[in-house]
Length: 504
Length: 110
Image (cartoon, rainbow over all chains, first blue to last red; front, side, top):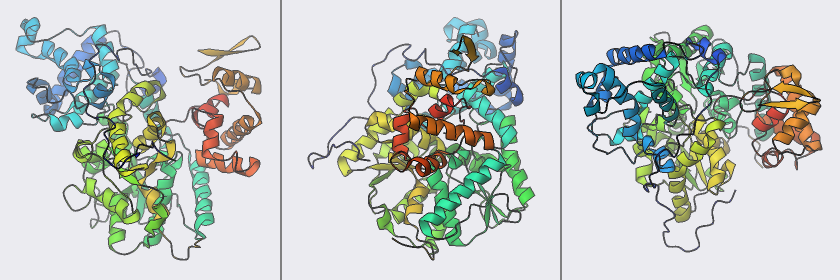
């Protein structure tokens, strides 16, 4: 439980600089590669099983198709002036020192090929404009470095032209998939979701058993029969939450928090076994079709169960897809109650429940924790929440402060819109990239160590399944324990006192 | 990669999870554990056996919490807690214990 003991004197102590420029080392992470997908992972997604014979032709055509279909993508490829504002904004660059992990260099891996085949200068004077042929070496380089980008978009905040490296990285992965070079982690998971409804592969019987087990735990703890309903026809609210909430720690503790809040608010709600996943890995691989298919399950479940509202649990990129794209992908949601946001975030629900006095809260239940909050990248830079601008930053903090007595923010340039990625986002949360994940977490961990030194912060909370898993794995490398990362609704669960609850 | 038991080669994926689940025997479990640098004791086997029983019933590994609760019931709170599970299986009770138990790797944001 105890973090670094760095508070030996009262004066603020600099433990490290999260923005420190690393020593540049060419090729430092060129051998860091993630496992490639097998044909049985690629084919269910509509991709060729393995590398096509005519891959070069197909890849070049795909670049053209994407530039034609997606104007923003073409603008991103055309407008970079190499100003350098993005160079030191990427946590993987800061962590590895590999110059190809500078966002501009990462973009150029694809931009140089686009130039060669789709611009006048590149077609006739490639040596003058940094244009290059698409060779197998280039394809391999794409695979390596586009799987060292977590699509967190911190660099895009710094770019004066608003170039979004995440879009380029998604496009690159789509091109790779289209020629049969997929990533095992993402593609296996999407294929599994299409079969079972979630990334974990949890079937309805197992899901029901898990939920019943958790109900037992809740009743043991509180003496109150708090339910975790599954597939309830006619419930008002459909909860769409990452399947990690049914499996991992501290995710499950967050799920128990949602259940307590719903119980205290007296609403009827349900989980769906058909759409038992909030995460949408279709976004990570840049595949509109797969993203749509995953989203469509949510619509189908909402219709089949006859619910009035959809609420998303704590899942970062799910909320980006939910908030920003769900209506386009699977709308119109004219069959839902239009008086509520479609979809709504659990943080909005809990925040309103607090304002409406529906929750009885004993903040002292969290007194053992000195908290900080990690803004998850996709929530911070790809969505909003609530009724005020910046709600995606303010609501989680408001809820935390409502249930905890001790809260300190990390350095301003490492939170809110400038937040550092956890180091495991965008389809990189896989064991074969553990070394990269540990290095990529360094800026966030350094900022955390600073508030530990300055304010005695012991724990950090997040609202993203990937962040939670990533931190539980990498925090021990930075002097913390694996349970020093918490779910925001875990803190809520600790502090909420239910009617009829037995207190010890 | 692959494992060898009694002169027979057992196929695995890149990460050492066996690909044909019926291949598993306790002997193979011991071989996988050795490759993971884990010396299997009574407590390790209790976890592995619970995972296998659960998998047979539900075709998936249990949530860590469910595992811990069961082990707590059968072996007491000194063994049935999260910290101790990580002492038994340093790469995690879900992933590493599943690998030794011959079950598929849990996927997703876990």
